[in-house]
Image 1 (cartoon, one colour):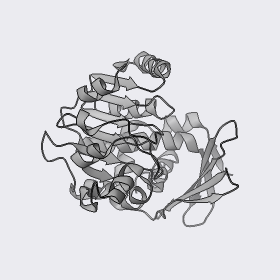
Image 2 (cartoon, one colour):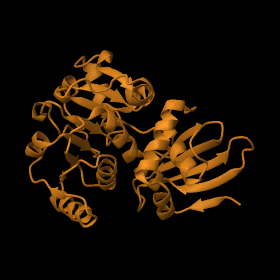
Image 3 (cartoon, one colour):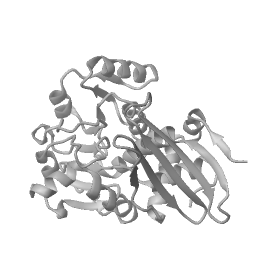
Image 4 (cartoon, helix red, strand yellow):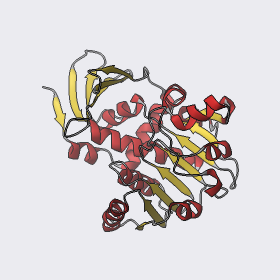
Length: 306
C-alpha cells in the first residue's frame, strides 16, 4: 500500500543538518532531472510537473496553480521504486518544497557567505520566509541577529515574534535600506516583480540569497546588485530560463554569461565559485530543482544517501 506522509510527518523527518547532508550528496552525485514543464489547464490555471530519478527512486512533484481557488498553489510528491515502478509514497508537496528550498540556500551559504557572518536579513514575510530563517540559523550557529522586513509591516512583526518565541534572535526591521546595509546575509523570499534590494546598499562581503523569484518577470534585486556580485545558481538550466533577476540583466547586456561562475553541483564538487576573500559580494540564485525533492523524499523514506 502506498504510504501517505502528512506535512507534519515530512517536517519531522527532515532535520536541517541531515537534509543539508542529503542535498549535498545528491548535488555531488547528480541525478536525472528534466527541466520542469507546465501545462495550461485553462487560461488561468496551470499544472506543473517536476520529475527526477536516480538508481533507487523516481519522484514526480505535481503542482497546481489555480488563482481562483481557496488555496492558489497545491502540491504533492509521488515517490516510485526505480527498479519496479511501484508507488511507495505520496508526500505533502508544500512541506517538501519549503524544507528543501530553505536547506539548499543554507547549504550554499556555507560556501559563499563569510565565515564570520552573524547578521541575517530576511526580505519577505510570507510562507517561505520563516523556513529560510530557521534553515540558515540551524546551519550557521554563529548568527546573532535575524531581521525580518516585509512590505506588510504587521506580518513581518508577527513572523519576528513567532521566530523569537522559538528561541531565534529575531526582530522586525522597519527600514529596508538600513537593514540591508547592516546585514552579512540578505535572503530574499518574495514574489516581487520590481527590485527591492539595491546594489548600492550592499556592504563589501555581503552574501545575497535569492529564492523568491521563479519566473522571468520577477525581480528581487536591481542590476547594480547583480553586477557587483559573483553569481552561483542552483542549476544553469533552471536559472538561465526562469530567473528574472538574471535573465533580465542578461538580455539588456547589464551582465554577461561570464558573471555566472558556477552551479551548485560544481561549487560542492570542486569549490568552483567559492568565496575568494572577505570583501567579495556573492549571490546564490535558486529557482528550485527536482533533485532537491528527490533528496528530501529519499530521506523521508529512510533510504539513506545516494
